[in-house]
Length: 289
Image (tube, rainbow, N blue to C red; front, top):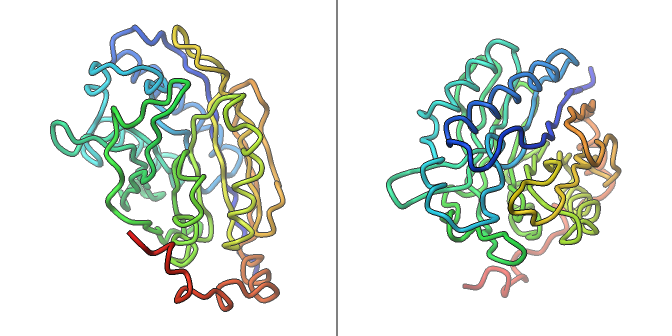
């Protein structure tokens, strides 16, 4: 019997002013995404991934300590508790990227993974932290991830997470493959003119090199007053052969759904033996510090 997983990506625009009280922003975005999760579940999705820092703006467009207060504990904070209830209500696995506080002064860009019973399975912390123009001042907010590249064994397949800027680094993508990932989600916030030409290039290449599915998510719209550029959406799934099998629009809130045939992974690996033929003992400079 074929192993088919129906998966969904949620791309969404900001629905509250960035100068509003932080709690008001969080509540509005959480409520908006609860509706989009319900829509995904109504379309039969078994696993749903939200966008990077889903419950607020992409606040890394400025450097202000105000946003430190936006961080929450994982899994004990209010947003993950809310999403655990949503996962259980709809019977879906959720990948929930939020701003995490571990202790005062130590913050991470994190994605929690919750199963369809509302159980917290674990988290991934973004490893590669950019600090570049225009307005991607992430080192001001995030500590580099320290939990490795976990893969979560779920009823919908083995799930890994790689967050936004991570996608520019093939090493972690390979780690996820070696750890057994069948579906890797990359929740992102990226704008036109910066890396859009790479958006449909790098991640299909990772999918081919590591022979798994990738779900790439990007938010939509602009976020005044920063206006660092247009978040151009175009969220998509690509298969282990690098083919884009479903893609969202450029400029609207959307739930992108695709049926992922996990048996295709074994079929592709039987043809292209990349894991058999790799030569890690010869990659001395990659492993160097």
